[in-house]
Amino acid sequence: MIKTQLLTIAILSMLALSIITVQTAYCISAGNIEVWVYDSANDTPIPFVRVELDYAYGTGYNYAFETDANGYAKQYVIAASYYVNLGKEGYIAKTGLGPYQVYEKKTTSYTFKLDKKTTPPPGTPPSEVTVTFYLVDPDKYRVTQGHCTFKGSEHSVDGDGKIVVFNVQPGEQSFTFSGGYAAGGQIGWANFHFTSTIIIPEQDCTYTVWVATSQVVAGIPPAPPIVPKPIIPLPSPESILSWLLNPSTWFWLAIGFIGLIVLLAIFAPGLLGVVIGRIFSKRKRRK
Image (cartoon, rainbow, N blue to C red):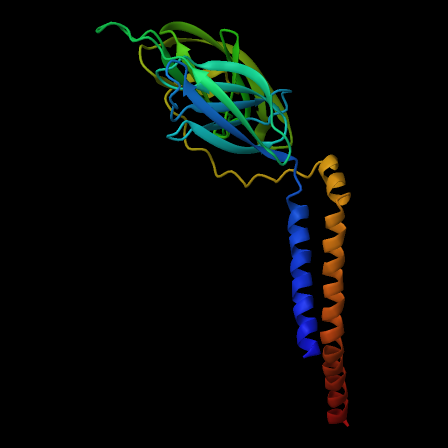
């Protein structure tokens, strides 16, 4: 009966120790951002709006996602300040809004409104189109740290190396591309910065930007090679310190170690006896 109770305590203690271990593994300075996007004319939700988050201080923490059918989106991101870009076909895009702060271990909500484009008379060519760029390095990998500047507004790549520029007038337009990529698959870094003049058609279009040769080619890029899984960022010193200063952390660690000691007290003597018994039995057989 006593052994059963001790075993139960030990199992619960080890479970608590496992929880602490998981907490440590995920002790990352991050939080959630909620975005609501509405039509400025009638306050109705706008579905499938592309939302881009550009890290305010240029260190590459960029995200891109879309609102759902209710004009709502929620994204788990590194806690930091971000500029927000919003765009959807049929609406006037907004870029460089903010910066907006995302707080550690909290959900922060922001509401935005977009203006609908005016409808041209029948037979009139479209006044503005959407242009999509894919930034690709020489090894066919998508560039993860790249930007496109158009008429003073900077747009950043998403996780797929894609940049979407809304409200572009058909005709001759200039785009400036900048950023960097891992050169030659080795430990090295190559920067790029060039301006390309493109004849934009009177319809939405897609281009592949080969950053190493400064070439912009119409069409989607070739399939990228298999990319290794990203490395989980290490916890920040601030988050580790706050975790260590939390009294509940030490309480559950103490419970876990007590459970480990109880398990050793229950099973270690028996295991030691079995090992010693086998050693002596082998010696007797030899004699």
